[in-house]
Length: 310
Image (cartoon, rainbow, N blue to C red; front, side, top):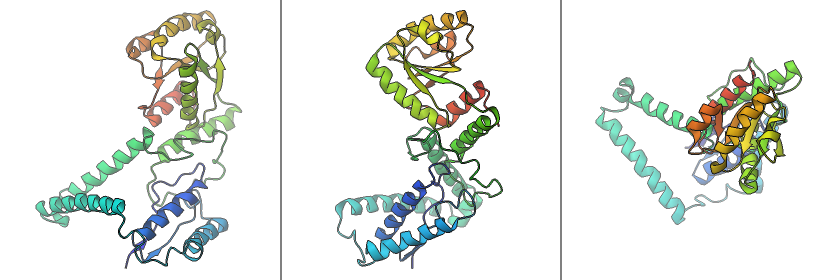
């Protein structure tokens, strides 16, 4: 008898209704995988005590899968699927290898006492956290495609501890700090995504940077500039220069003196990871936003530079 329940690790506070979709796809996977029974938790149970609406949706999700989707009618719906059989064999082979390693260590109990099991679990947890921080593992509404205007601080019950660890908690903490700052000061620092030079590359990188900053609840404004002098006059608190890699060094070499001339204390960030990164840092660039960026580390550092604190 196999009972399955969707995991809590990928639940999110922001865009929390997406949790309904996550639970649904996970429940379907469990059914197709051969689970005899399933239970689905309310979508808002990681935010506060579950609401009546959350409980009803969780119950009705299970009923729809059974009564309307009729997923209980076939005993083995994936039987004979070449793709699923190959994936199952791959998972089984890796699992068997782990079992053999435990046996060679003297069995599960001895392996646990020796710290081997804990080491493996910590390694896997760290790998998941890094994948989310680097945005290779997508959490819709949290580390990608975030709705920058969404607020949850009033919705979250601060006295309710998470029943299980959630991989989104790091980014959520950063975003809650932004919410707190906005509520105290009435507004957030002005962030300008300065497109200049190569128009095609500048547009692509400004879109990427806007999505990246939204993960911390930081709104940004896209503007097109003819050159560094115009960028320096933008009166922004944070300037994200969006152009092509070969152009960055020349742009920053002109931009930094222009900022000093205008008496601006704006922090400068580059959208990209050019080969001239070391030279750009020496000129005063504080950070870089690109595909391999650690979102949690970069966004937390930018918050500190903008004096956004708890």
